[in-house]
Amino acid sequence: MAEPLAAMERLAEPDIGVFSDLPVPDWRSLMAFKRRFTDPVPKAKETAFAEAGIVMVHGTARFVGADALDVGGEVLEADNFVIAAGSKPVPLPIHGADLVASSEDFLNLDDLPRRIVLVGGGYIAMEFAHLAFRASSEVTVLQRGERLLGGFDPDLVDLLVERTHDLPVDIRPGTAVTVVERTESGFRVHADQEGRHLRFDADLVVHAAGRMPNIQGLDLEKAGVRTGKSGVEVDAHLRSVSNPRVFAAGDAAASGMPLTPKASHDAEVIAANILAGEALRRTDYAGMPSVVFSVPPLARVGLLEEEALAQGLLFRVNHAVTDDWFSARRLNETCSGHKVLIEEGSGRILGAHLVGPHADEVINLFALAIRHGIPAKALAETSFAYPTGGSDVSAMV
Image 1 (cartoon, rainbow, N blue to C red):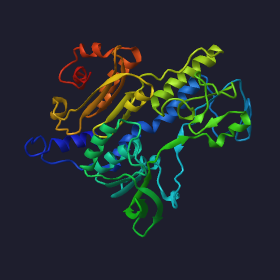
Image 2 (cartoon, rainbow, N blue to C red):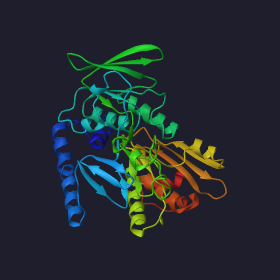
Image 3 (cartoon, rainbow, N blue to C red):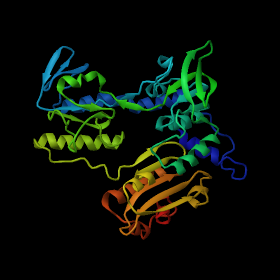
C-alpha cells in the first residue's frame, strides 16, 4: 500500500502532473485484503503436514529431560528435537509497558488511529512509520539511541531519516521512554531527552524496540541446552553445543541475522543433518541480504565499513548520492544512494549498501556476487536491461 501511494505523491507535483487527486486509503479494506491471503496459511500448512504423514500436537511444550518433552501432560520422547519457536518483543523497562501494543497487534488493527507513537528505531519502527503516515496517521518515532537502524550503513540511514522527516514523520533520536499512561482520550508517553522531560499524546503506542528469541518457557535447562542472549548456542551444524539431540533454527538459534531467508536456510541444514544421521551440512550465511521495506527501501548485504576495517581488510569504497540518476529522477525520488566495498587486489565485493527505488531488488544482484565470488569487474562489464534498477549496478562498482 505504501509504495503506490508514495509513487502517486511524488508524481502529483504541479510541474509533473501525472496525478491531480490522490486517493485516501481505506485501512479496513486493506486489512480485509491482507487477511484473504494470510488467514488460510496456517490451515494449509497443517493440511500439507498431514498429507506428508507429520503428526501435529497443539499445546505448550516444556522439556522434562534430555530426550523428552511434555505437551499438555503428554510426554513425547524422540531422538532429535528442533527448536523453531521464533521471536517475541523484548520486554520494555518502562512503567505502563502493558499498555503498549505489539507489532502483531498493529498488523491486526481493524482501524488505524490518528496519532501513533512508535517506541524504538529499527526495522519495525521505520516500516510502520512509512505505512502509517501514508494511511493518514500522525507518527512519532522515539528512539533511545542516537542512531536509527544500527545494522545499516550510517550514511545511507541518514538519507532515509532525512527523507522520512520530510514526509513529515517526527523522529526523536536520543529519547528514552520512561512511562506510558492511559488518559481520557488515549495515552500519554513520557520520555527523557538529554535531561529534558517530554510528553507525547497518542491514540496508540506501538512496541518497535526489537525482538528476542521466544525460548524462555521451554525449560531448556532440564534438557541441558545452553542458551545466550541471542538464543540457543549451536555449532556450525545448528546442533546444540551442550545436547546433541537438540537443534535450533531461525530466531531461536544464536547464529546469523534474524531474517526469514536465514530461517529457511537453517531448516534445510537441520533436515539434511537429521536425515543423514550425522553432521554433514554446515550453515553458510554468505551473501544473505537484509532490507528495510520503507519508501524508498534500504538494503545491505555483506560487511559494513567498520566490520571490514575490524577484519583488517584492504578495500576501496564506491559511495555516491544518486538522486540525479535517471532511475531516481524518473520517479521523482530524492532519496537515493549507494556504498559498495571492493577488496583491493581480488576485486571481491565485501559489502553493498543501497537506498532508493528498487534497492530491495538490486541488492539481490550483489548478494549473488558475494555468495558466488563474482568480482566487481564482471558486474561492471555485464549489460543489464535499461532502464531498470539493475542497470545502475555497473556504475556502482
